Length: 506
Ligand code: SAH
Image 1 (cartoon, helix red, strand yellow):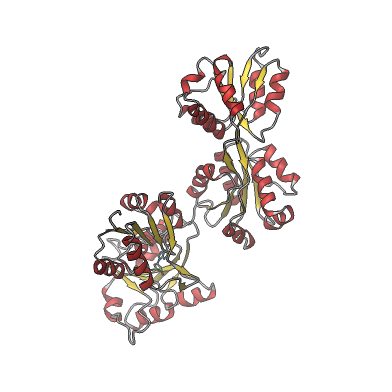
Image 2 (tube, protein in one colour):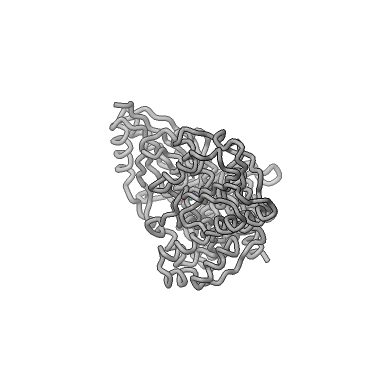
């Protein structure tokens, strides 16, 4: 049996980039992750595939498990000889009950390590553009719970010292008690005009900030039914947000964007959109798998030295072609004198990663571009290998054959339908939290329709801006009854992102 070990890891306040390097390392080597409501669930991707993922957080305000049960579970899992990662929002020792978990580990004699995290008070303030201290404004800051232990008869907070002793006061868990908190601060000498900021889901794309003063913030919060989780920042530093705001005023802030690519390709597009402030909802509509039978492709690979051109029209084609090459015991050298054409800069970059610089990258990133480029060449009798998707258009083989070439087009990868649209995506669509749906291939929109049902698709996407990467994809959208609002001028993810930004900012 392996030795039990527990890492108490601070996940940071929400933005998954704010976990520490050490925290990520520990996640990467664990067998079990016990994670919280406030820890960004995207961090679970760092856990190894075999790791058991256990949710130990809150559901709708009620604790899913009592703290005692959580402590018992951590101890029990560790005692199975497992490395347990206890992933907690923010920092484990700041209002995180990490102390209680530590006590349980000490009592059980289980070794542990504590990995600090960026606590919400610090991280959220930064993303709200509020420096907690500033030489010219205040020299001290206090972190206070706004939610005292329920069975405490009287407040343990010394309101007088707090009101006058600390320049900036940051309350955790203070939304429900906001009226009492503000009243206490004012009753103990803090000026009613002191600025206050409430920051909800700080550091996440959905971050919301409400500002006011000690005198009016409670009423303002009630009016918009401001909900937890939120940090309350009290002090003159809050005024600096007016000039330091940087995160929640980016071009796509507050916009929900549906990304429908395959799971392994969504990352790059999602990153571009997030960079601009968008809230990305990933709904993979395609799973890319190798064909059941690779004998066609293997046959072509065996004849590689006899081909004049190898045409690869997507990153998937590149990946699966080289995977198959490797399965046949070969590598890039097998391409030999055969020249290589790549459609689009991403495909070209994927080829570069295998040490191949394409001889031809057509200016037009579509199958038509390839055909146009070959039209200027003598193609009679030329042998062309075109490893393709199972549902690829027939354009390239048909047109190049018409030019006199001999085209071999084996299936290198297949697009298959995922099981269903994830529940959280349906919920976001139903509640109109998705403002723009993006389609980067005909199959993405067709598959979404197949998963949703055609009529349901129209209902779900009612009022949603539809962005299609190119004319073929746009035509597929229209065939399904969707109106296409955005079509970038070039068929790239960058241009698509620009078109979305332009739409939402002009
Ligand atoms: N250990 C955590 C705090 C847990 S207490 C930390 O160090 O951050 C839970 C409270 O943290 C919430 O009620 C809220 O006040 C605050 N909080 C955590 N994440 C937050 C976020 N992303 N935005 C705003 N408040 C957050």
